[in-house]
Length: 308
Image 1 (cartoon, rainbow, N blue to C red):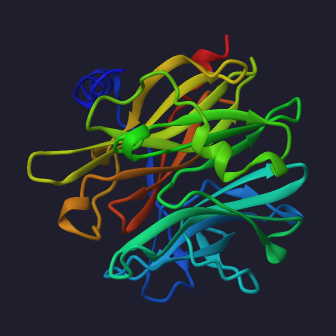
Image 2 (cartoon, one colour; image 1 turned 135 degrees about the horizontal axis):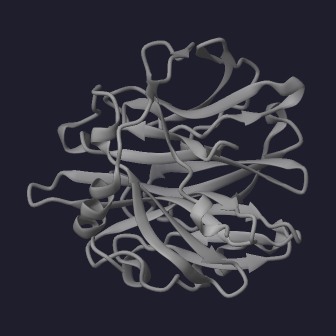
């Protein structure tokens, strides 16, 4: 594992300016849309983004689904009402899997908040049903179906097992095998975050060689208590859960357009959402910015070099 300070220096030595765009969302009234997914294609070839929709002074969010109309993303009516933060999307056995983080009063102290990852499934976005609630206290649970049908499960325990947050991994044969016990017992990847730093998986890509490209975030606090989040990637071998390529940073806040922040301690936040890999060797990185904004940056495809 390498500390963020070193990863950031390595990144800045190779980084070059590239095209950046702020995404325009229509239909969310005066609420912010951030921590978005990459666009995904639904029926009739319509491109859709799921985003966290939330008032600036609140943590109580809902997932909004937005379809592309020319240069804007417009709220889709008739979608399920999912009171979740930080949406993610994948396909398993021909169904949509939509997940996010549920926030609710803590059972131990109702004056405090607790959270867990919830997973929904459905043949269409309009008829999603809840099928799994993860362990209380765990965000960043992710699933990805492999070419052989197995399902990769990425976890993010904290506390005694995971500190501020580390990535765990296991394989299952089907969705019915995904249980709280399985998730809590999933082994951690080899050391991948330095002590007092944290992160998690955001989106998983099956590479040409069968390895898994992990779009992630990596984060730390500074001495003033402000948060610093960076978009990062690593590559793992799903057969044995080993890290083939260690964490590297692929974008930081300064790469994006200036904009609003939810709080002063969240200014320097880039939260990875999704990556669209393109045939020309570039990729569009979709991110949440400062817990208040959503942007897209075109970068060199970070996974190409690992597919040889």
